[in-house]
Length: 179
Ligand SMILES: [Zn+2]
Image (cartoon, rainbow, N blue to C red; front, side, top):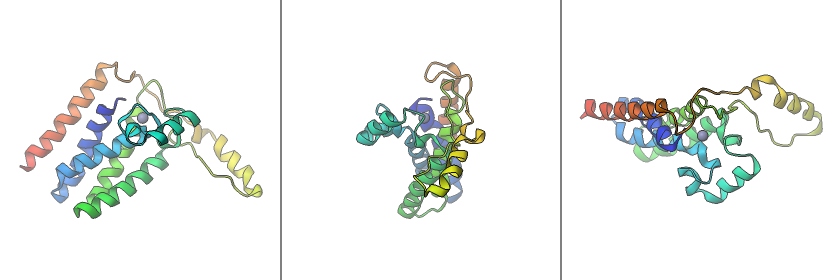
């Protein structure tokens, strides 16, 4: 999915959660920003342009969408860290959930595309020799290699456009209800 669609989905989720703490606008921004972070493995993405050396390295080593940033573990972790920072800065614990929801929504949307992702893959560090067989088994297990894919071609499908417009509209409706 394109960055705009990810931001739209992240913003509506972030706003819908943070509205309960009266911080819907900040929640929308936090959710949208978190939703853009997994694409840091692509130098042309919004996040990749912000962290270019990291983006170039990730793309070379793993390839876009095949890197650790497109895994559930990364999205929950980065959402948690980013959300805690936002919660401390703006005084609403709900922003933690806004950020996690935004980051995880990235995987759900990319999982609807033809390019597919494998979000349950494990990127384990080098382990002591006696643990290596366990590591190999986990990495080869079918559930960790399971692909999420769908019918949408990123940026070329009317359904993606409709989804983005719908999400941005819902975000504005949340803002409108509160004001
Ligand atoms: Zn992505």
